[in-house]
Length: 88
Image (cartoon, rainbow, N blue to C red; front, side, top):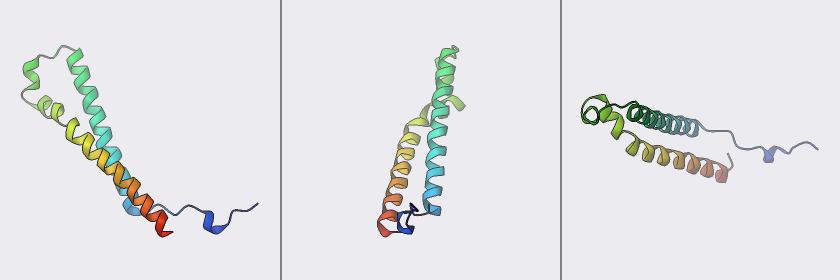
């Protein structure tokens, strides 16, 4: 049986695609940062290196980044729900 036209899911909006890319990028960057920190600690980098330079930024970045990524992912869901309720 052929699908009826109103059974098709609504097309993905530009806002939803943009939010999804931003969420994936921020979360992916945070995962890479966490992996770099684990590798650096395992390789025996001294603790003094984590207080200055690039490693201090890498050490701080995952905490706000994961929260922002979570908020972006929730906004992707909210935009999708609004689009479905409007029937786009």
